[in-house]
Length: 302
Image (spheres, helix red, strand yellow):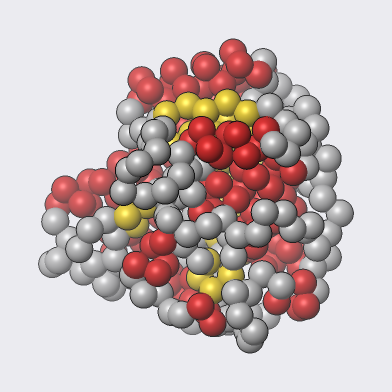
């Protein structure tokens, strides 16, 4: 079974613009370095932040059109600029330590300051241990854990010099010790959280908020459709995660750090109602918490 990328899905990023169901922060003057912005969730996060005035560094592996999947880092950057901000595209393989360091320097040179780092890019392949070749295990570990480690680490000196900042990672809470049928993927995603939450302790006192965010329901992406993770009745648009990220950025990074939060909890804390959450659904109905249950089978909404 072929591997795919969470950030490299072929589904649209949702409606062109949708106001979040809370008072969104004014991000004018901020710059976000976002990994995996070519499509889906990463692209939607970039566009949503741009809609609130945030400059965007659009990064990913796809720089030229015409490949197997639609979308490029340059297209996303252009669409961010259409929203009135400055954007800069950098082709990047997050597994490459030298390339990551160079991308961080380029982003800082371009904008002078980067205060938001979002680890979104990650690979996905769902298979049993017997069915997953070793090289695919390595791919999941390298893209997800190593990539998060390298990108976060590259910005540490810069973030420490600033008066506050963020490292946010698209990964689940670490609450499980097994995941039959998807052990390698689970290991790699939980590793992303482990790195981020460890940084929260290491950077305590530096005013840098290090947190993870994860959807309760499945989100409409190419990977969701490819692996048959439910039907459209079970899915929400990528806006739900983008708005969850936006709600985090409305907080004080010195105070909100070291948390692994679900999107629904973040949005409710920001003031979203049941009706607001329903607006993210692809169809009428109440999507089951299938994404949360991917790692916590006993998960129930409070």
